[in-house]
Image (cartoon, rainbow, N blue to C red; front, side, top):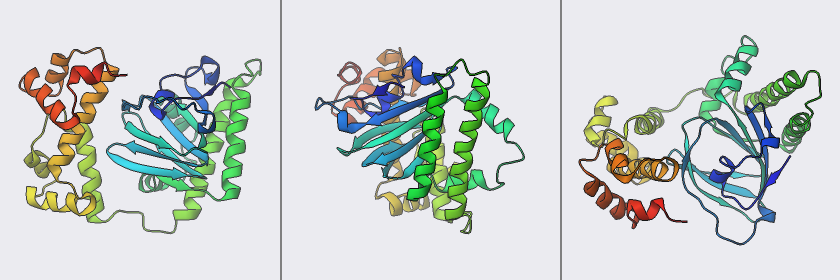
Length: 298
């Protein structure tokens, strides 16, 4: 397995060694900040194409996912999903961990293989507890699982190569479900009304912000008054709904500027601005840079 260093987390998702992959469906990457050079690395937001699991072995990492910041410390795991946007990663000097990326096709196959076996409430628990703490014993077991998967990936002469890797991935996910169940399974399997509204609002932003920038649109979708929606959002974040909308548009713009072949005027159309000039002024007001400056910045 190749160890990839000197990269911000978004870049790990874009520079993966072919030797670290299984049928272009699975990648297991060692992340080691202790070997990072002092040069400044890029930290641009990207939209994920596959499913990912971040497993912290030492130190900590702070990562923005879909407008929220998460800090993961030693013996913590977090799963991220296709179309999630990640940004603003920061590492402690002693950070080490694994990044496991797998395709939607492999996920579908694993789901089919485990149909009828999985805990009925496993998916709901995973959604409620996106960050998962592990005991030392649980962490050691999962680390052994990951190392076993890594050992099988290059062994293409194994007559059951595909099957053993898929079964080891299933074992890893089953162990994660088991850890989550024992920690949270006896708790309430639900969110408060305010938490549910905030989560649904963020989901709507991900789906609709390219076309809709009106507070009334999101309030109507949630069957709320704009004033009440603002109250719910401000209580948790000290920001208004309009602040969230503007930040989500900027995030979408940054992703398109850095990770598409679209020109600025095309991105302006994609984000439903009346004209490129309006888009450029909005982007500079929010970021201090023009879209063109950001697109070609190092």
